[in-house]
Length: 74
Image (cartoon, rainbow, N blue to C red; front, top):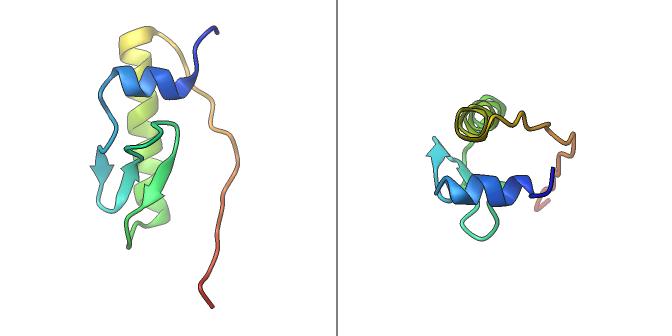
């Protein structure tokens, strides 16, 4: 309640953790970045992993904010 999810994820040393090309940002642990070829499934699996680790360690159930940013170089 009094701490951010980014701080919780960071405290678990998960920055840089990845599933295929879906990666927890090394700059801000509350962001997932696509390193090139991450699939939607990769991102969802990474989110599930983060939620499980935070719950196992802190007993806190994180909620996913439904914000998806998509852009194209076209």
